[in-house]
Image (cartoon, rainbow, N blue to C red; front, side, top):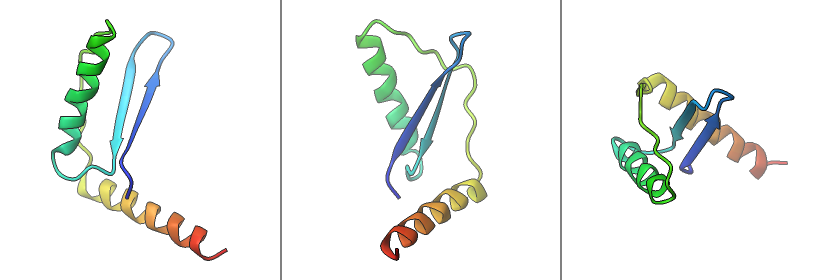
Length: 75
C-alpha cells in the first residue's frame, strides 16, 4: 500500500491530517517531519487530538488498496 497523507483545513482554521499506509509507529515520525516543515515556513500546527486507527480500520485500508490494484490490473 502506498503511503498517503491527507490534509483538510476547515473554515475555522482547524487542520485534520490522516496518515494511511504507514507501518507501526512510522506515521508519528512522518507527523514530526510534517510539523518541522510547517514550522520552517512559519506555520505552527499544534496537535489537539490524536486518534489511532484500529487494526480493523488498517485492514480495511489495505484491503481497499488491494481491490483497486486488482481492478486496474484486470480491465
